[in-house]
Length: 192
Figure 1: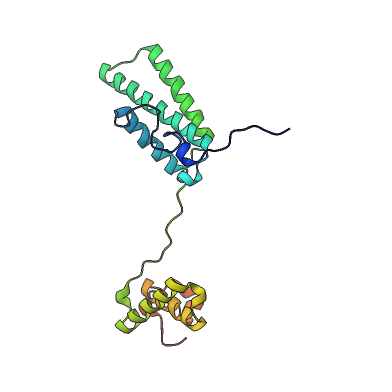
Figure 2: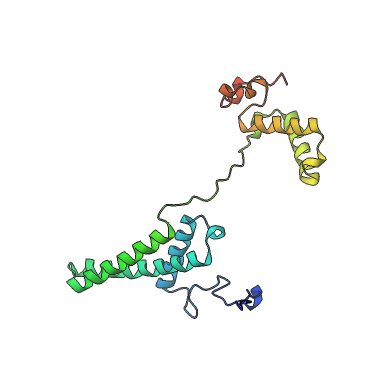
């Protein structure tokens, strides 16, 4: 039997909530509630690994959790102003806190860090002027033609220059596992 589930619409026919332009339909995004809701949702989505790692179902749970947090914050403020809390108010607060805990258990309480940027930091001052010029030339060629546009010796030379500029060597001592983390000034670059 064929399923008759709705198909996703093109972006121009989606609602403002679906497009991410509004968090709640018809609510002014400048209100205190909407701003706090936006901040909480953004923080929880980041904790789950970012927007690319959060499913629609997880997003709905995150939004529910964010709303619960705002309600709890308002009650906490009232408790602090009054200096006391009634038993029914505390029981209601505890019930909401348990609901929040269950949502977080469903989502997973552990934080997922987004992928780290592993791009090496290059210090061009570690290269002499001729090496800097050669590095720029090889990078331009790589940018235009990709790795296939470089000859094998050019690719090796670019790798060696990048290693030297990042503070790690690519000479013979770099092949020795005991010397992988040696500073660049301790590695002999004269041999290849």
